[in-house]
Amino acid sequence: MIDFDEFRNLSAEDTAVELRARHICNCCQAVTAALTEDEHLILASAGFGGGMGNTQGPCGALVGAVISAGLRTQGNGTTRWAKLIQENFKKRCGAIICRELKGIDTGKVLCPCEDCVRNAVRAYQDVFTL
Image (cartoon, rainbow, N blue to C red; front, side):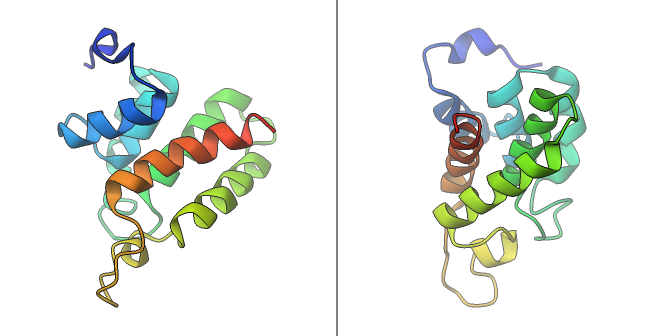
């Protein structure tokens, strides 16, 4: 799977960006990998790229942060944490829907995928340092 030793000197956000940039992972997997290093979760998150199943719906990077929150909280109160992550992400990126973030209807990109990946990791980290 992923050789995490290669990324040990990088921050979680830089790891996520690199995993996506190198086409090792989609947005959701990159965030999940950078935050958990859990191979089962990385595999399970494979279908959430491209705005949840390539539908341009909820941002895959944001979904990856929420998946990671579920692992961190062991499912206890995860919905509360997910809402906080989502709010933080939206403040950073301007939206939570992939189609809006990419500016597909408006022609105005609110947040490129690289920044969505970086901001999803930051949103997760910000919420869990509250």
